[in-house]
Amino acid sequence: MKITAVIVAGGRGTRMGAGKNKVFLKILGEEVICHTLRAFENNNFIDDIIVVTGKNDITECAALVKKYKFSKVSTVTEGGETRRESVFNGLMCASGDIVLIHDGARALVTDSEINNSIEDCKKYGASAAGVKCKDTLKAADAEGFISGTVNRKSTYLIQTPQTFYLDKILDLHKRADRESFNATDDCMIAERYGMKVKISAGSYDNIKLTTPEDMIIGERILKRRKENGI
Image (cartoon, rainbow, N blue to C red; front, side):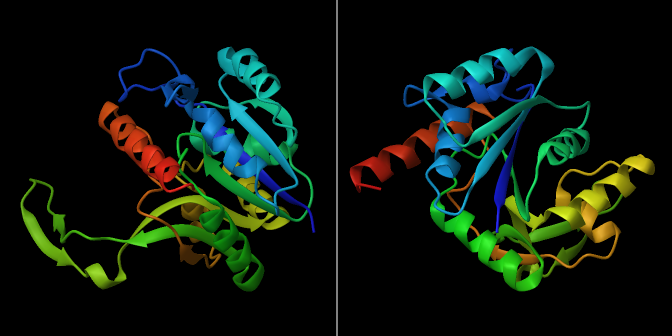
């Protein structure tokens, strides 16, 4: 069974205030995208990797792949105007049976999250890494007043990887493309067309590096792992 990872790395870094694609910022002396790619490169179940990035970032991304000898990266391709379009472009380059869709800025993903996602996809048909919400969640009305309390026991923070059988998720993306349906993640597309997605065990460390504060947290996590020999 061939398993492909599609890494979506086309972020503009607006909230990071970096003035460039945030995946090229360095954390502990190495680009964010390299930390991400290494997690999938070193995973025993991943056969190949497709990187989707901005048109102006393809050359730099390909250079990093060559520099760090990421042998599983088969394609660096151009993304679209939206995340959904970028994922769709990546899926069109994929082949095989199962595909993991992962945010390039989630550089702290580990073997555990990757393996859990693959195992649950095989068992249930589709999966997405997630963790239970720690905080009390409130719903709000149109004027910003609290309108109710969300049941925390059934509320999760959904992360990536989000893992599917390639033929099924590609079919749903084609439907979404025809309908110009935009989505912030692939679970949203699955939900729209009635596909059930199992929440697999994620990690609170598996944060998306979106703001300068996230970079500080990410650096601390990586330092802790190095100190513990992980």
